[in-house]
Image (cartoon, rainbow, N blue to C red; front, side, top):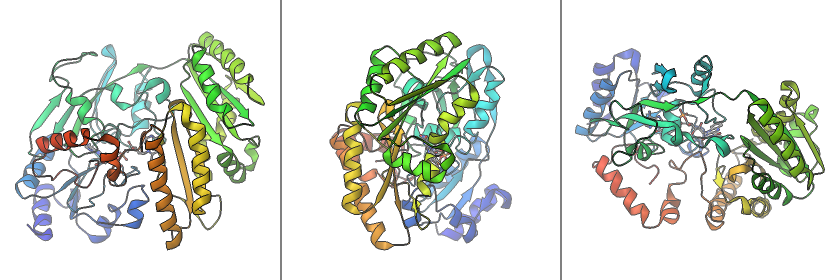
Length: 466
Ligand SMILES: Cc1cc2nc3c(=O)[nH]c(=O)nc-3n(C[C@H](O)[C@H](O)[C@H](O)COP(=O)(O)OP(=O)(O)OC[C@H]3O[C@@H](n4cnc5c(N)ncnc54)[C@H](O)[C@@H]3O)c2cc1C
């Protein structure tokens, strides 16, 4: 079936208000937030906006019978080209399907459709004194469907884990058009070990196995108090050593962030009023819980950090906490402004390594930056070893683009060599797919067999993940 015949059929199914085929509209869908899609753009054949499981089923049956690729899309904030039709096909834009179906306060659960925005969900849940803990930096934009498909997390993963810990069950439309429910058709149970765990299989499957159309999430009670500590170090190695000391003192903070010298410099140039102390590394700890436990944990963190840090500050006052955290909250933006002619690119930006290797990795990345003549800003969730590397380049300069791609390749290989992974939270998509055999060995063959079982014709988001 050719492109215009596909568009005609979709127009019949969805009408002109919920289907796009204009070249300019389609061009918008050739991007997500990755550097890859800035280098290579591929427009889909058409975009549709389904708003019911039956509509998704209908389009899957149509695509399956005509061998047409399907690419699910949330808000397009992904960093890996995951929601872009790199091999052509129909994009299913689920971002308008925003319904919160049920808030089950008695069982501390919520059921949503995939297009609900993460921050909106937490605003609703706050009225019930509940929250959905994973907290990506893209919270104001990304959809819960995209988070589940990517197993997203954020700076509080160190205490609260990733999206997968909260997904109790899913409704998924398979490439053949079957509607399956994982986690039990009627189950509201928090614990469920019945059957093979298809819920876990779907979480993080990046749209290559089916379209997630309904999500049942577990919620947690909202903590009553917070505290923030900042510790400033003259030696890089003292930062991970302090994190370990805090853990060994029996404290699990809700966030532990690091800014190395490059990030401190970028923040101070971007927002001089923040005046971060000049240092090799800054750690920011967040603790949450009940007021006495927050004070207790704060005291231990001050004591542990005080063994190595040049300066330690602590606060539970909302205004001073915001001031202590401000440097971290502007780091990503600061990386984009280190020079007027450059921008920060999202490539090699998400490796995750063991805590014991973080300092070595930060040093190695600095050396790689020097080797390729590329400025690199480093920060990240040190509590779980997730390093966010921000290469800064002029994307209009082909030589610089070529060098940065080599740098990024070395960063990914470095992560594997250091017993880590190429991605801690942003996913594989089209950009890190080539490392899959190296990362997974023979297990990669089994992943391909699982894909084959769900998607024998290979129409579901091809060119991604495995
Ligand atoms: C500024 C910024 C900060 C970020 N910070 C973080 C962070 O802290 N932590 C983190 O984990 N990520 C982060 N990200 C990456 C991204 O926001 C997350 O991965 C997010 O979960 C993607 O959601 P989305 O709705 O934009 O999905 P999209 O980008 O639209 O899609 C992502 C993937 O999910 C698939 N998909 C989407 N919806 C469905 C569905 N309903 N069914 C099946 N597959 C589907 C797509 O095919 C694609 O493979 C950040 C991105 C930006 C731009």
